[in-house]
Image (cartoon, rainbow, N blue to C red):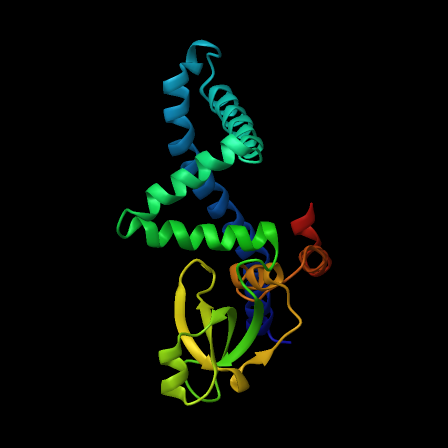
Length: 221
């Protein structure tokens, strides 16, 4: 093998090793910056800087406060009074133009993940946005009578979500005989969407990690 070929192969191998590390560093930095923007107001509001002098420790304490608060909110929402409060907030937000669209979409996906197939009936594959191109969708309900009349047959309402953000997508009406059934659960389908089709289960994530470590042992070190 010539020197040029060896250098080229070495460069490609180096890229394969450095790229995952660089992406990981970028994602961690992004998350830290986002968390700082969320935690700093909590630190200031609760005056946690007076409790601990270190800024990082104060942010850590603020994170603990947020986790405890979210947990208590979840417990409160499990009982009658808390549930009525949450329902009241839902109704109030649903009255706000534009905001209600985003909020309702996020709530629908979170409910589907936490409660199973209660909002989304089943996962299907439809020929969309053109012939011979197939997209994954969620059947949500029977289509309106106007859609049945236009198609000349019974149709279903299908949400074709975007990836990796399944809270956005397209609402389409599809004839029932053109719905291709799948054996995917809603949570598996959402996991596929947010990982851009890379994996649909935790086991597959673990296999991916092991494969990566096997190909590039230095990454695991």
